[in-house]
Structures are given as structure tokens and as C-alpha cells.
Length: 189
Image (cartoon, rainbow, N blue to C red; front, side, top):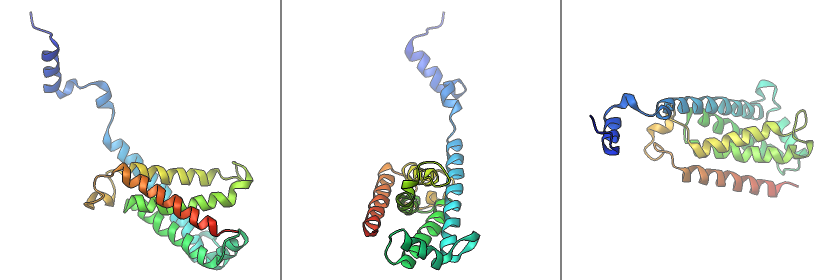
């Protein structure tokens, strides 16, 4: 009669990968990477489109002049300069996030911009048309990507320093985004 001691069972399970635990077979790192790619693309390209509205007036945007007037009406000094900063942060942060390039910093750029957008929409409740649920969703998505990293399907995988994402990179990026947003909010009247 064969022995069924724990050491024999462990050796058999290790030697035969086809007998792996069902949970191990059900989780695929490619599924996570595909999900992160989808999130990066949708969030990044959405933010890049918003930025191009501010910078160039594309997609029905106000351009620098119209966006600058909005920033001035919202209590920010130097509305045109703030429009350029927000437009550049959204456009380049969004494109970098979509590509998975310097993902923690790209997410920080979006996070900082969206915290300021939350400050402007805060008094309108949570739901549309005057609410802030859209801004909350974009803010949380950017923070989540900063913390998790871009996944395998990203330019960062080819950069030596960012090849292996570390939680500390993401946490530092979230902190930078929040501190920068706070400084900008202090300038607001």
C-alpha cells in the first residue's frame, strides 16, 4: 500500500504542475495586465482629450482663452496660465498613462488636476449634472494606477528603474499629486 504521508503528497503536488490547486490555475497574470491596460487606455485617453480641449479648443473645448476665463471665474489667479498648466497635465499625463510611460508620475499629474476639479465641483452634490461623481471616478482611477503600476503591457516594463513597480513609487506619486494639488488650491480665492 503506498504511503500518503504529508512529505510524499507535497512532493507529488510539486512535481506535477497539472495537479496545481484550482485557485492557482484560475488566476492569470495576463488577465490583470489586460485589465490594467484597459483602465490605462480609457482613463489616459479621456484625460488627454480633456487636456486638448483646454489647450487647443478641440472636441468643443474653450481653448486657452475660454478655459482661462473659467479658471478666473472659479477663483484661480492667472486663469490663462492655470489653463495651460491643467491642459498640459491632462494631455501629457493622459498620453503617458495610456502608454504606461512613467506611470506613477503620469497618474500624479492627473490626480493633482482632478483634486482641483473636485474642489470646483464640490458644492453641486454627487450626481450629474452638477455633481462630482465623474471627477471622483477619474481621481480614484489615477490613484489606483499609481499604486498598482501599469501592468506588463506598458513602456515602463522596458525602463530599468520602473520595470518592477514598487508600492513606494505609487505612494510617493500619490503624495506628490496631493501636495501639488493642495498648493494650487491655496492660490485659489
